Amino acid sequence: MRFVVLAFGDFAPADVLLAPPETGTLVVDGAVHSSGFDGAAAALSGFSLVDAVSLDEVLDALPPVGTFEVRPAEVA
Image 1 (cartoon, rainbow, N blue to C red):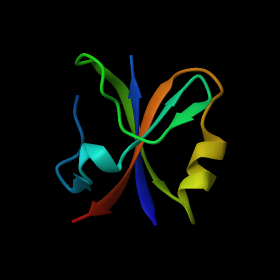
Image 2: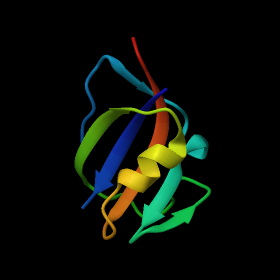
Image 3: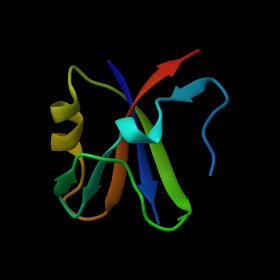
């Protein structure tokens, strides 16, 4: 399965299609929340396209500090 990890702190390649925001998983300083980022608009500081077996595998690989949103993605 493929996931996009958005790091907040604005763009994504044209060939990456994100799932809707409600499918996102928000991680703030290691704490996992079941919905995507819902705060004020924040500039992205980076993103990664990750191939992983599961969402848990992606979450386990995130740094312990920072704000991230993980969403399912497809590459067109």
